[in-house]
Length: 488
Ligand code: GLN
Image (cartoon, rainbow, N blue to C red):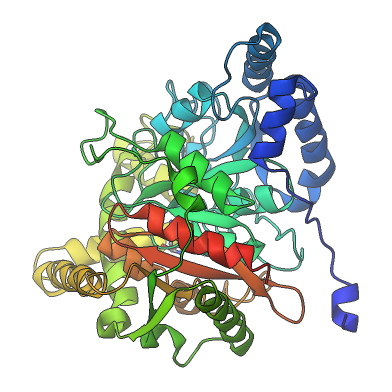
């Protein structure tokens, strides 16, 4: 251990697996009520330092735990997540609970309904502990854009947990929940999972309903799970995925048994390794960790295939055009009238609108609204937004061609390990470049899983991104399981 690592303040806790907890709950040796109470104790102990939970939904959690214990006592069959304590990113709504989206403008807002993914977790027996912190309206890569303060990385509290779903990743890493839900528009599940050393899933666009998700960029937004291991993440995805009549973009494709799929061996799978993801700008320790993960896949019987995805270089600009354009439209609804914060000091209606927005939104959100409004304005639409949509289509086609020859593509999830708090806050472009490996899959609509692939010398986690074609989550889970099994 280097002298630096001795001074690191860490809250990483040994995760508990769904299988173990479920066995205890079924046998009656673990009571869901006690389990929930122990998680609330853990939250009380470490939340003041890590700032993961923004609000707790204790009453609802304990009522659910009591129902699970009653079912178990009767010997009735238990649903797949019976008694499992789960945290929810604060951009997904829960009936009657605060939903801030990390923004001051939603202070005091209490939605009257549950997001579909949330309702499905609860119907499967999960105990919903509360709402976890995130970048404001999910815009960011470090959780430093939250109006409620940054989350600290449980691996090293001087570092960011990644973003925007920083709370969701940190909660699992610090054992403040067994699993969590997050959202990913350009990397917001994958990058924080990678920074905190946990598993995160980017489901195919449309695989999980967006109903009840506070929209950032509707053509890119996805809801997905975080867990301490691949199989648990697969189980969660199986619960939340599937057609929802309340989301017109949700897919009617049948939902496989992802956990069982993830058990299948990887022997014979063809793995694409895109040269563009191992070029300049990739941290050397991240590269080495990913190369060890790739070697483990080869040892497990996968065939490695070098591939090229030359359009990758356009992904960051295309993403920041499409995402900001859609955000500028989606965020128009926050005007002080219907939701949350209203500026108290306005004489006219129009001053009330602009003061509420000025006082309610943070700097990054305002920057995106301005960028997006500009990209959509008359005279610029064709040059920016339309062009970006065209390149987006080409990027998707490039992936489709690649997936004709390979079952999965592996890359680093992020170019660096978790960076220090404050390191990039003064430089929005540097922050945007942290998304370089994740935004392509977002634009293409394909799916992926990030899985820990070892650490740097200082002990910082490195995530491997395993991408697969539309609706082929099963392949991504299988490959991720093989990397996990190598215990790098
Ligand atoms: N970091 C990216 C952004 O700031 C992605 C955010 C996300 O996926 N929600 O837009």
